[in-house]
Image (tube, rainbow, N blue to C red; front, side):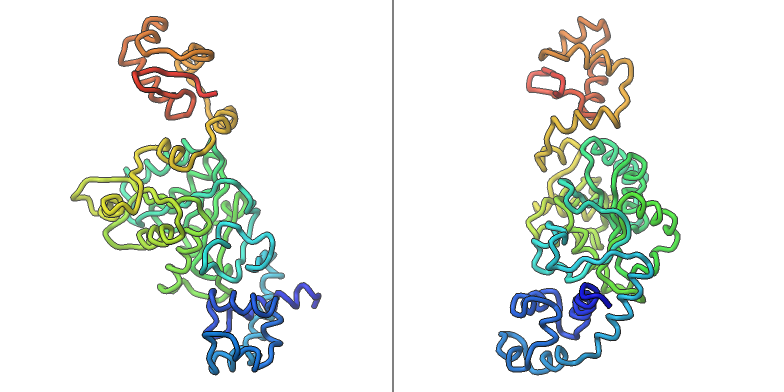
Length: 366
């Protein structure tokens, strides 16, 4: 075993000690400098740490967890799984800012943790046709900005977000509530393989861990912690999406929610978040762009790759290439009726091709 593998063994083992959670684990790291240092600490040294009782000291001094850690080390090596520890320089910075960030992350795939934009898209498993179409449209419109889409591979909104990301050429990350030796739900195993090729599969759980109920809130904190913003498309009055939103708020991250009818079951959670000012009302991609202050110039550069202009859109862009113009002038120059011009301007604005200003004035987005 190499020195690096030896240290990884202790890093994995640290999270296996009964009573050592994410917060206590970081306190121990700060005290002893490394995971291995924790295991080689003297009893008197451990007893001096505030909040650590005798039973926890006994657990730390026991070597029982090291054998399990060695097994996991063999598993991740065999399966070409990447491992990141909290103290590593390449640990995701957004997640490191969270007090309860996991000590260990395991992942398959190719993930650029330094990407400037990460957003999570979550929602009910029982998504409506509106929820699914809204999700795909939102991802399509945001594709020009190249965000990484984070979700949980569940039925409904989650899987729709992943598929849309793959469709429009975006990296996407699935966060599991179990080990990387399985995929839940199994019906999404093929999609998981695609995601691994264009993003990654991430978990804090060791192989052999089932997708037990108590694991999902822990999974949700990673979804929220990895992201600049959490977007809730549809949610019932209770559910995992609301837990993710609550966690995102506790991390001081933005939360967006799509409103719905007052009697619609799948919108009750979103409406509650908006009504209680726990989420920003989301109507279109423009709300995300403005809410997160994404650079407009970057968008127009990326659009040359992802946006195909219709003939009408191209005429509008060419007309507005070097000046602002009132909608009445556009109608006059193009010789279209007002309704057609208004519709084409709206579509062009959705794609980020043009900007609108008060007074029905438009300008090319450059």
